[in-house]
Amino acid sequence: MKTAYIVSTGTELLLGNTMDTNSEYLSRELSAMGFKVIGRATVGDNRDMIKSALRTGYELADLVVCTGGLGPTLDDLSREAAAEVLNLPLMHSEPEMERIRDYFARRRREMPESNRKQAMFPAGARILANPVGTASGFMVSHNGKTLVMLPGPPREMETIFKESLKPLLRDLIQDSGRVVLTRTIKTMGLGESQVESLLEDVIADPRGCSIALLAKDGEVHIRVTGDGVTDSGTRSILDSVIERMKDSLGDNIYGEGGDTLPGVVVRLLRDKGCTVAFAESCTGGMVAKMLTDIPGSSAVFWGGVVSYSNEAKTRILGVSDETLKRYGAVSPETAREMARGMRNLARSTFGISLTGIAGPEGGTPEKPVGLVYLGMATAEGEETRELRLMGGRGGIRTLAAKTALDWLRRTLERK
Image 1 (cartoon, helix red, strand yellow):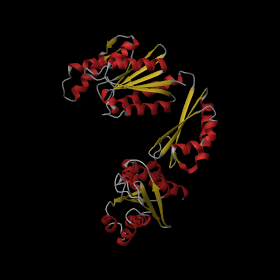
Image 2 (cartoon, rainbow, N blue to C red):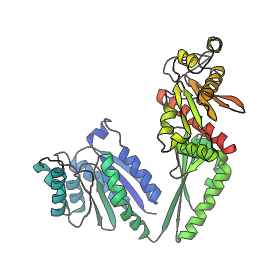
Image 3 (cartoon, helix red, strand yellow):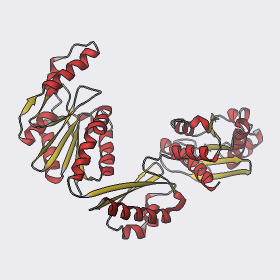
Image 4 (cartoon, rainbow, N blue to C red):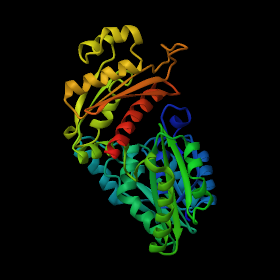
């Protein structure tokens, strides 16, 4: 299997002022293509440190991908560092110079002289054109290894990766004489250790495949990579491993590949001819945001109510004053009445509610931070669920919203 090493440059990354989303993106994409990412490094805007990181990657991996430092300013030093590591001279590209001039001309701006350096590339480099910025990337194959330099702005980096680099990397994988195939299945509602326990037999005998678990926001994704000689043979082994995983994980699996939990819920609602409306208190509209991010969700999502105050719960959803006085806003009784009121208001198949304590304040020994109640109302009756969630305010809200969607997903799959 081909190996990859990722280098991120930028002092703002080291200081924590900017999140390094580029490394996360590249790790996911390269792993999905069949590269084994063996290391990542983050360095500041220092030529010697960039050179050291590139040399380390070059020694350890078949492919090194570096982001950042291709701009026109004095602290953009990556192209010079790459040329020195490769021991190749920087050469002027007139077609790139014309592209940069045109970039400024179309915006009716004068091109600064400093942008001229962006038309310089190591001798023999393959230029990876940037359709959304001035800093094109480049790719150099040298001494049996491949070095790729990409700009730092995530939009520019991702555009170049998708449009120019990805096809070239596919060729690089194929040239290795091996067939590498990857599939990812996605679960919701289980912790990483629970998934690992359920998959114990599969992990012990992966049939030559590699298995990696990634936990995030209540989800655990399982990436399975097969590495073989023929496409059909590799695919057959990969499929057999996936089927064993599905047998072990059951309905904890919500999707595969590019599926998202909200997208799967919208699809199931459409397939079953159902509609849903949400009454949200502690999540403040997060479920509605997740659903409306999905194109076409208007066909199945009636809408929602953010009933944050007790007054909103009573006046809009019809929760009784007696219920709130006796049991409190965070209670299964209130969650049930919120769901009922939401369904009646929307005349939807499902009315679902969320009410809880997201923190960091407001908790008591009887009702601690992280206590959330979900309610579901249908023509068949009403149900509630209690959640005890851990983490900060944002994490509790996100997990509550996703758990509500997953409850709806599992209910739809049983219909």
